[in-house]
Image (tube, rainbow, N blue to C red; front, side):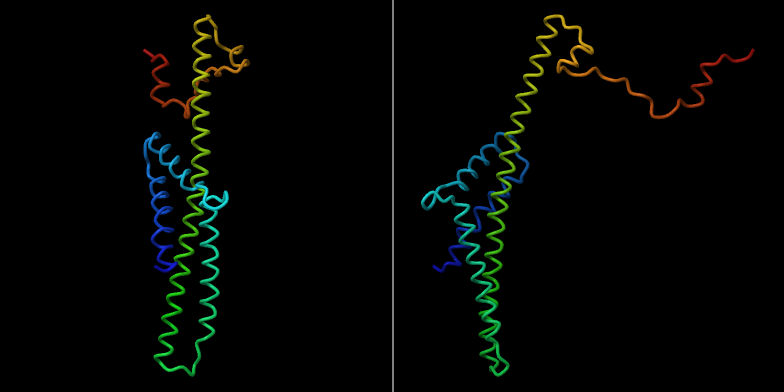
Length: 187
């Protein structure tokens, strides 16, 4: 089994599947479970405390650079004095190296995107939980003020309560027939 086969079989599917699952609109409980699983996969300690995501990004980055250099060297080897069969063989090798390069690029980008997306989703979920906690505290404070007989108004607003709702102004003047109804008709 070649290095490229290992990369395609084991390096490409995990970030592809995890990213696709995290993008899907799912209930909050499912999303939290997927995030926990993705976090366990990404931050798995592999070699001497190195996280899996950093290890894979390093390996695919080095493979990508190696494939690019090797492709460049093969392109230099194409000579006008070659026979058609030799030229075809060299072009086939170039094509395989370019394919390997693009596989590395895709794998590198997917792991990087998964890492960044997972980090953003973890931050989002933490902030979302914090907002829910603050809303619960605010509603609890509002309930305690109502029970104690708080009058509401400017004093509540100044102490951190919810401001009173403003009356909305009309977006347009009243229609002419409505203005006519208000006036008395001459007899």
